[in-house]
Image (cartoon, rainbow, N blue to C red; front, side):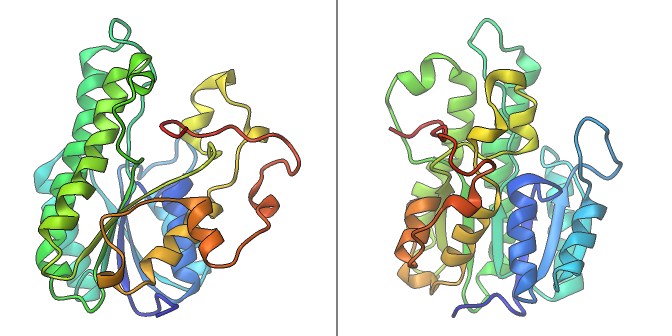
Length: 273
């Protein structure tokens, strides 16, 4: 299978950034895309809403459903899945993209930030996957994709932001466990992570710490996600994929088109050597 035409994807946090890029790439195939995110009203500091994302999906050739929801609310998760299934008849693919970030040490991490990251990243990923399972089990080529890094126990990735690392690696551990748990049902569960920092609103919120010119565009992750999600589910599961490596396997060798500023040195992303 080389296309997502007719497939239904539920993507969390798809109102902007990587989630939106994945949605638009699927839409180019003619997919149905459920935009499940919290932003329903425009925010001058944080561009993009579920409605603008839905419009972008339809402009790209897909069918869109905007669902406003808070991933921290278990009832909202169940309702979002029910709304998606009522509209499109099922769910073929779940992309757990939503994530909260706070890059600070232990004393500089308030409890509300700690809770937010764990509720959105690990708990939200777990509960959304749980809610989608009955529908994925009935899908022809079911995939779950987490935007999460390869697991690591290297202290340098914990030292400066322990709370964030624990929350993010919780998503990775979901891949480790769920890929084995759902193997018999033929549900692929994989992770995807960028080789370099991606220019998104989350990165912009870090201030001058990261210059956009040293980043790649979200489209590189979207193209890599597309390559994974069009593979037979029983042939690829339990993998911790890196965007650049996935695309190299498909024959891509020129990555300059993904650069925000072609020719500029690129910043490696967190958790990668």
